[in-house]
Image (cartoon, rainbow, N blue to C red; front, side, top):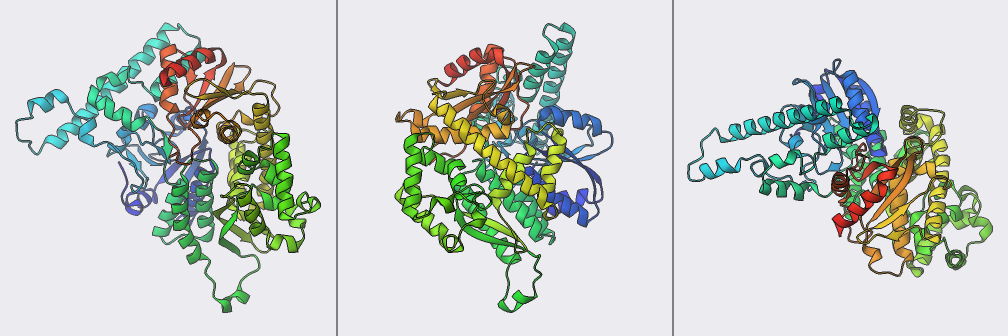
Length: 598
């Protein structure tokens, strides 16, 4: 059920308890976690933090800790699947779920006892009415002529509980049968079992639902999208508690910027949420003229900026930033000789000497830096780049350290998805979490260096894919596969990195192709995951259009294509449009996907 009063129904409940935090591996989740940690520190709340990168890790961690805790908080995971079915908790276990993934599973919405959803209801959720989903049509016909009595709601709730129990028993029997039969190899059986448990298809357990209800559910669940940033939701809780600090506000800003950098929300949604945060920034960072001399040199200042849409340019050279930012690289078509010439013409139009452009931004002449944003915007308009500046925020730590919100997003993401072998996924998670604290600026600067490598590798891979025609039309969608042995291929084996590469590749392809039909197609991209196990990561990206609502239909399409071909697929990631697939099943899986979407 949706929690209406976060203070009373959530915070005051857990304040006197020992709680377990499950935090997904994305920047928004990390920021929400930092805000919640700060609140818990204020009120001396005991908690244990467990990072989880997928459903398998979540289930394993829950089994390890379920005896020690009654209250569990899930950040950016758990809302879009039937959580009780996956985790099989005790009846007194309570889950508080703060998740941006949409649509929210209807079982979670209408469970009033164990699932508490920390989700803003002013988001456009469009949850089907209880009566439309959990009703027995035969009973409806019988009672159509009778007056309804007061016991009707309780009867409907009872039918819901019975249906959930029936589905759970059926799945347990199937798992026991699979364990006894041993007809498939263990890893394959595990993958198939996990996939069927997480996402039972309409042809399996959902046959229990009658046709009209199945149609309603299909319409509701067919598209995956994202709602309000979890970090913003947690900051609003801190504000309600009158415990909001500048640090918390900055984490909320970074969480929102992560959604924008990863193209998870529309431009309209981003601008609206920026407006909300801008009011908080004005409130926290307002200074009267006579107070300026009394401020500490080391104080933290957050300010609203109308800044350049260039990645890391204040910590890089302007030339490198122009070459490795997705927006400018796609518009200039920098993978071609003609594109390189256009970049030189752009710099000449601004009147910037190459010597200045190719050295570190901090070392550029002050006279050039003063009007740089206006100069770049003016020249960008001439070259057809009308969105060269964007609304964002910056933070100053004293006079020396200044970061844009997007800088912190790229740095934190690179630390978390680092391909370095010197630590586990948990170590990378903790390092990324630490980099968000102002006391660990050395880790943030290390993350910026990793981010530069990642951005360079992304643009080099995009140039390679476009120059060698690796992006091909399969009919209803575009397809691109990174081969084993491709330079930097291991950088893109992680879901977030591959998703970002796919989105940037699609933007560049749309700018480069002359085929109008291809400009409107979505993209499916595959990259090697494990050579040892023969698996690939597959991600689906919606079409790149100005009016795109960022809704992704590939999650359900992948599920149906794998089901119809018995492809060995694992839906382990919290984003449904990212799957793991056996490499040898890829061709039949793609054939099924083509016929399904044609």
